[in-house]
Image 1 (cartoon, rainbow, N blue to C red):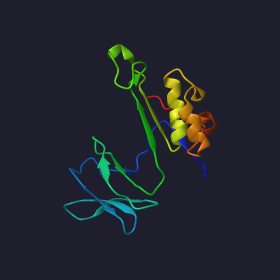
Image 2 (cartoon, helix red, strand yellow):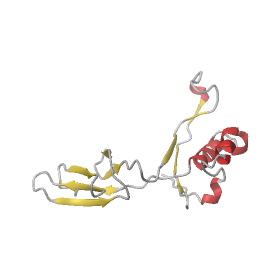
Image 3 (cartoon, helix red, strand yellow):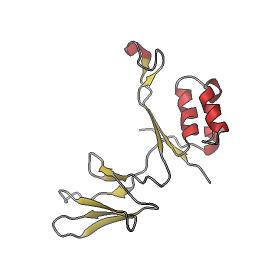
Length: 154
C-alpha cells in the first residue's frame, strides 16, 4: 500500500455557484455519495462519490469547499503546528515558550507526520523514542523524506 504525505489538505467537493445563496448537502450511506442540492428546485448541483460511506461534513467559511468524514476510508493525520511549544510543555510557562512556526502537516502516515513535526522542535525522529517504537509496531515510517513530501507555501 502506497502512503501519501502532503502538507496541504485537498478539497473533496466544490460548493454552489456564487449566485446561490445556500444549498443543502445530503450524505448517503446507501450509495456512498454526497449530494449538493438546490433547496428551491431540488436539483443536484454537485455529486461526490466516496470509496466508503460519508458521514458528518462541514462547509468551509467561504462556502466554496465541503469536507466529508469517511470513517472507514483512508485516514488523514493533521499536525497543527501553526504555533509550536518549544519548552515547558505541555502547558507552557509563558509566551516565550512558543514559536510561530506557521506550519500545518497533513498526511496519511501518522509516524511520518510526527517525524516531520520533530524537525519543527529542532529534533530528529531518532531523538524521540516513541517514533521508533511506532515504526517498529508497523504504524508507519519514520523516514518521511522517502514519501516525497510536498511543501506548499501560502
